[in-house]
Each structure stands twice: as structure tokens, then as C-alpha cells.
Image (tube, rainbow, N blue to C red; front, side, top):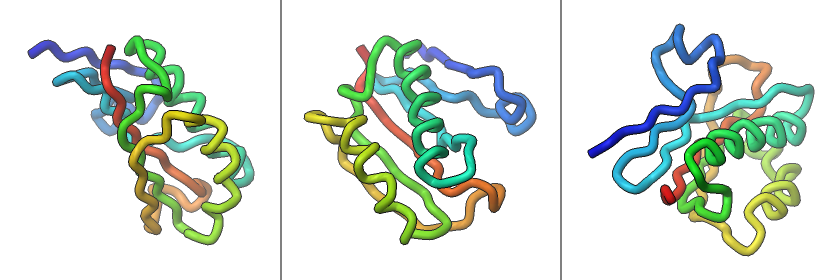
Amino acid sequence: MTLKRISTGGEFEKRVGYCRAVVAGGFVHVAGTVGQGDDVVTQCRDALQTIANALSEAGCSFADAVRVVYYLPDRHEFSACFDLLAETFGENPPAATMIECGLIDPKYRIEIELTALAR
């Protein structure tokens, strides 16, 4: 099996020992991704852009997503992201889960992990 590793060159990838995405076994596995910004919607939008870039490098898009997991430190903030997520996935919604948990830094309001079919 051939693996393709996709890196954004972010400081934590090398420091922690991971890459943004791995294409393997017919799937693109995108690592948990946080975004920058002052609120959950801005961070969600930024994280989705980072994920979109990784999917594009893998030769696919959000239309190929089959599974997404959202991690939030406060589940009550999730509803603010609904419109953005519905717009992002459109007619191709993946299976999804939202988990309330602590994130690596309190400034982060959402982390998104995604799996897509590889093309």
C-alpha cells in the first residue's frame, strides 16, 4: 500500500510528530485541525480552509467526506457553526459526531477531524 503524507509545514507538525493528512487505503485521513480567530465560527471557518487545502492536495474535496468529528470544549457553542457547516458540506453531508472535551489550548473553541474518500 502506498502512503502519501500531506504537511502544512506548521510548527506543531514537526514538534509533535504528525502531518495534516495521510492518504492511505483509499481514504484521506485529516488530522484534528484547529483554526485561528476570536470566536468559534471564525476558528471553524479557518480550520475548514486548512482542511480544504489538504483535501485539494490529496485530489479531493468536501464532497468526498465520509466522516467528520467535531471537538468543542463547550457544546453550547456548536450551534453557531451549523450554517457554515451546512454550507461547506451542502448536498454531500458526511456522517458526523460532536464531542465535548478539553482541547490542547483554552484559546481553541473547535477542532475538526475528517476522513474522505481518496480519488
